[in-house]
Length: 114
Image 1 (cartoon, rainbow, N blue to C red):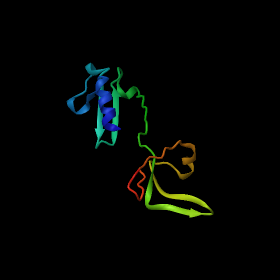
Image 2: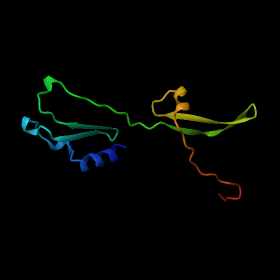
Image 3: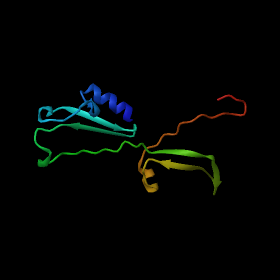
Image 4: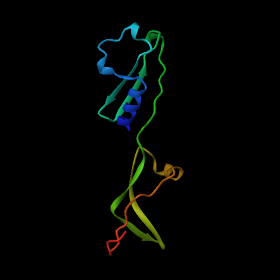
């Protein structure tokens, strides 16, 4: 997500922050970005007024929640089939019922057809 976000930012005129040696008042309106180990992306538009007069900050989370099946995931309980899973993405267990999920995978039959 960060790599794709960086490409989109560059197309929109954002420059890498490390290319700017010193920020001055002449840089107002300049668009810059910075990344951190391809995990974080920060976009900034330099303002017209001094930073002491305040800033506007918008923050967004790009971690995508997902479920992974465990090694032997399938089990049965009370005539129902269940899958043992491990979840990622900073989401609470009770929130999964409100997120639309898709199941992607490959089924391999004993006949090797699938």
